[in-house]
Length: 127
Image (cartoon, rainbow, N blue to C red):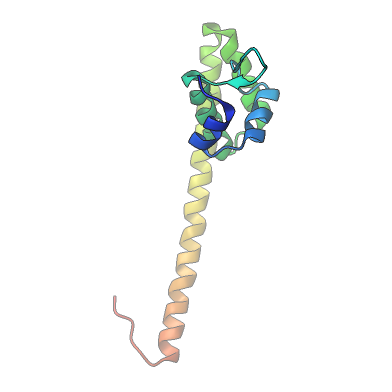
C-alpha cells in the first residue's frame, strides 16, 4: 500500500486531483488507514492511469462515472462498457483524423512560406 504522496510522485497527478477523482467516484476502491489517510494499491494505480487516459482523450467526468458504476455492477455490464469504449475510440479516431487534416493545412502554408522566403532571398529550394 502506498500513500497519496507516493502516487503523486509516481504519476505526476496532484493530490488534489486524486482527491477530486475519489470524491467524484472515479476511483472506486481507495482504502484508508486507521487515521483516515488514503492508501493506494496496484489496482488503484491502474484506475488512476485508466482515468488519466480517458480524461486526456476527452471523455467527460460524467461518462467516466457511468463507466465506473457499470464496472462495479459486474459482468452483466461488460457489453455496455465495451460499447462505451468503442464509441470513445471512434471519437478519438475522428479527432485524430481532424488533427491530421489541419496539420496538412499548416504544412501547406509552411511550404508556401518557404517558397516566398526563397524568392525574397533569390535562392532556390532543393527538394
